[in-house]
Image 1: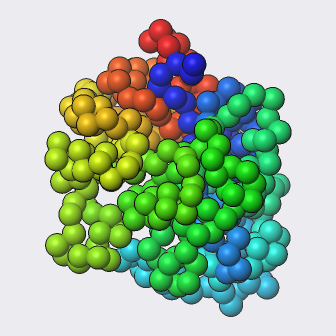
Image 2 (image 1 turned 30 degrees about the horizontal axis):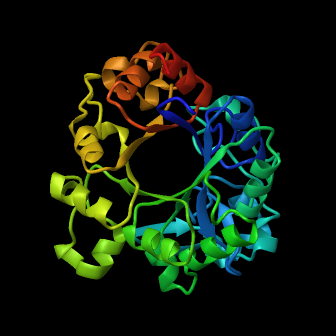
Length: 330
């Protein structure tokens, strides 16, 4: 049995290699991660590709590619105006010619040294990598912007179910599906995908599917993680929630685990994102000298969060999260 909490490599070992690259995923396996988390968006021709967002100017070399200059555009996605290049405006054949880049080069210059070396990947590529791994490794797949993609004729529930079924993963006990939208989780389940379903929760605001359905009357994330809301999530068939870590640890480095206890009482597992070692991402109390790219007191922060009893953590440096887990006796 895997010790608690589960350590999930966030977009691969993204503290060391450009996120969602083959080398990031391979390194996560080498470092011993229990599971790997990709983000799923779609190409124009319905291929599920692995990117943090469908706007890809910050994570690929698309902005420097003259042949794609005319694809630059402005769109409104979940109420926010964005300008750039979007996966849904490219075929997979076109996307496969792009090369990936570090999203946070100022904080992670070591990772940025690998810019331009690797292509984008599909979900199929990652599934094949996991099937060939020397040990069982879980998949925690995040479906991104489901309401938006459905509105443009690219239903991610259908595409995800088809891809997982084709690869023999739809009923694999290593599978978890997560999203900030409950609707798509229910849709994927209805399509016969048997993985665990985890609802991602922001610190403020409301989910995109809730807003699309109810506008200003949309139920907030805060209401959804109250006792009644959590009980409702559990009764709807969800298996867990995943929280922004700032909901569990404050700027003083003090942990607040009330929502963890309430969720557990409702029968839900609790995950949190994202454990990162650099000062730029730590609670103010856990930052040390050396600038935003230097590692701060990550041991204290990771221990505080894990000590709240969470069932899983997403980590950019998975081996550090595993070290923290061992220090707590896990």
